[in-house]
Length: 375
Ligand SMILES: [Fe+2]
Image (cartoon, rainbow, N blue to C red):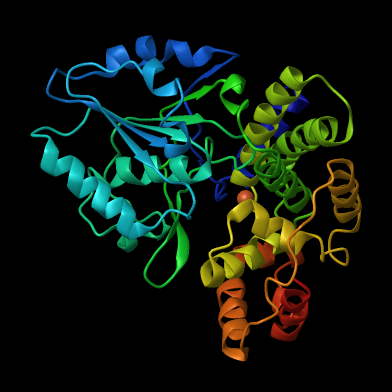
C-alpha cells in the first residue's frame, strides 16, 4: 500500500469529529459593465405565473433617474422606492411584508434589492419574512430561520459592504441591532454591474469603500483567520490599495472596488470582523450613525490594535481629502456611553476574533469609553 494512502486513511480518522462550517455561497452571479440589462432574462425562468409578481425594492435615490425605466417590469410587478438614509429596521421589514401580502393574492416570484447595504439587507429580510411567520425581530440571531426564503436577487449600486455575498441581514430591532444570520439569507442571484455605482457621491463612496477595507484589516488580523478567509482578504486588500492609493482610471476603479467588496465579504463570511465593527454598532444603535462612517470614526483611533491598517487608512483619507466629522460623542451623557459600551461589548464573536478567547482580560469598558470620547 502506498504511503500516501496510509496517510490519507489516518487523516480521515483524525478528522472524523471536525466541526467546520458548511457555509452557503451565492450560487449565481453576473459581473460586467451594463450587465443590469440582463436582469429580464435572468428573472424570466423564475417567474412562477402572471399572478406572482417580482417586487423590486430600490433606493429612492434612483426614483427620478432613468434606472426605473430599465427595470424589466411585467404583469403586476412593483417597484417600491425606499430611503436609505436610515439603517434598516425590523418593523420596516414587517411593514413591507404585510404590504406585499395585502396587495397580492399569491406570494411573489421573488424579491429584488437594488441599492447599497441598506436595500440589500432589506430585500434579504423581506424574502425571508415572506415565507416565515413574523415578527422579524424573532429571527435576529444565528440560524433561527426555519423555512427557505423567497427567491431573491441582489444588485449593489455602491461597493463595499459585502452585503451582496453575506449570509446575514443586519437590522435594527426593538432592543438590538443584530443580523438575521442563516443559510437562507444568502442571495440566490447577484448582478454586479459597476456602471450602477457611477452616481455615488464621493464621501459615500469613500466611507462604504472603507467598510470593505476595514473588513480586510479586521479579518486578516483576527484570530479566526484561516486559508479561506486569508485568500479572499488579501485579494480584497490589494484591490482596495489600488483603488484608494493609486491613480487608476475611473471605470477600472469601479470594477475593482466591486470585486474588492465581494472578496472582502467572502473573507469575513468565513472568519469575522473586529473592533471597529463592534464599536460602530454602538454608535449606530445610539446615534443612528451609518455603518461605513461609523466604522471610519472608530477605526481612526485603533492604531493600538491595527497599526498598519490605521496607517494605510490615514493615507487614504489624506489622498481623497476626506474630513471625518468631529464631536459626535461630545454631548453624550454617562448613560449614553454606558449604552454604547454595552451594545459594543455584546458583539462577543467580534471581540474574540480581534483579541482571542481571553478578550475580556484585554479590553475593559473604560478602554471603550476612552475611544468613544475621542469621536
Ligand atoms: Fe461592515
